[in-house]
Picture (cartoon, rainbow, N blue to C red):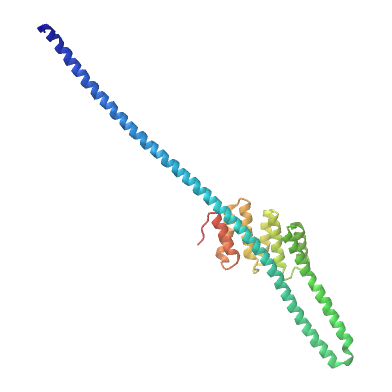
Length: 270
């Protein structure tokens, strides 16, 4: 090779060597950046999948909780219906026993009076028959309030709530001092509640609580007040009533029902 050609190729070779080294560094840098970006994308994809899985689990748990709450609410309603039927039967039985006891006591007094009358006068038989007639009349008339009450309660059980309201109101009007007055007042509230007249029902349950503060219907009235407030969308007021049942009447039959309703509403009780 001629010397001048060698001189020409030397700068060119040096230039090619320099350019190739710079390009390689740039390519390496770009490859590193791409690798970093790919790694970041992988992390993001992984995070998104985890978030999707978490959301899926949350949705499943929420559906499970809603289903459980619905089942609890249904069971509470069924228990409440059974409790009402039992209460109605107990009320009527208690009333009959009390009336029979009163009639037996009165009959014993009448017999004693009759014996005394016969001892005083052999001709006292007519007056004895008169006394017995009065006993029969009193017994007959005393059964009328119970028949009216039973008729109203049967209407309630059949779902004839308007007839039940009329019957219980008539009973209260004619027997305001009866031992069943507080019960009749309570069943008026229950009839209104069954008709979804929740505000009127709340007022009636308040009447039971205020008019008969020592009645065994007070816990039941508080319980149904709580139910009615919840139905009206006034959740806070409903919770207060239910908690009052639990804390102030812990041994009542209504306390477990109040606890179950609170649990269904997401409120834990101690």
